[in-house]
Length: 82
Image 1 (cartoon, one colour):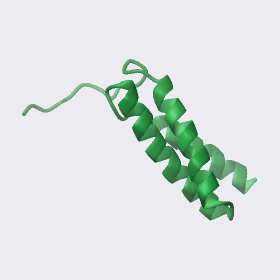
Image 2 (image 1 turned 120 degrees about the vertical axis):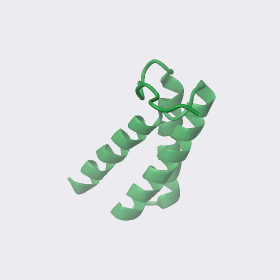
Image 3 (image 1 turned 90 degrees about the vertical axis):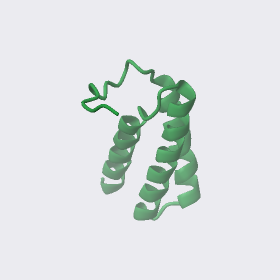
């Protein structure tokens, strides 16, 4: 049960953070990096293969980042000026 909870939490965090970027390529790249980090961390905490967790997380993160577009995630209006 704990492994499932950690996996679901990692997946939700990865999906939530894939909106970092303005182009599809940037979102896929940031999603891959975040997914690999979360996947590797979750595998380390659960005693699994860290490299396998990182590869799976990176693939899922890249897919989620590429599947989103700029209108899917609204980060709000910018409240500052340069």
